[in-house]
Image (cartoon, rainbow, N blue to C red; front, side, top):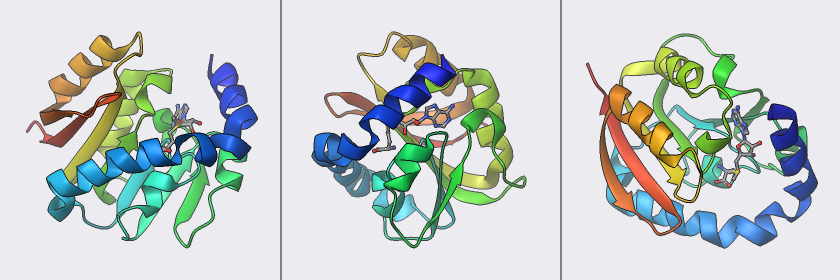
Length: 168
Ligand SMILES: C[S@@+](CC[C@H](N)C(=O)[O-])C[C@H]1O[C@@H](n2cnc3c(N)ncnc32)[C@H](O)[C@@H]1O
């Protein structure tokens, strides 16, 4: 499955921005309006793809994605790393903001991914996830997120935007 997802994104990488830039920017503008004041550096963008979401907030950020082809389309001053959410190559308590935009439905092991997200987050970190509503895994992922985070939500249309902090 991971190989299939990697292959899919490798195939569409060159046309990704043309196909999805406007759609993703629309979600990001809503996020900025809702919680822009809570988004602080250092930001981690998981499933960053071509970096649309990594660069959007204009703060120091790191993007991680398993698709080298998608990362090749990522041209910015921000750092990019090839890897998966289930094994984040970062030290404990590194990031003040963690975002994942239309990416979680691709993760193979959601529980492991959440453990890793929690490990690399600073104690008072702020989290933003957007979930693709038409994904078969939508309900399962939402439940897992709600077990771990105190989340508010906003229905954007294609995605459900969830944001908040860790449950202590
Ligand atoms: C729909 S794209 C979203 C890209 C970007 N966040 C945006 O808003 O344009 C989903 C991304 O998730 C990545 N992805 C797939 N499996 C992943 C995993 N296990 N960990 C992190 N990212 C993953 C894919 O390679 C792809 O680039």
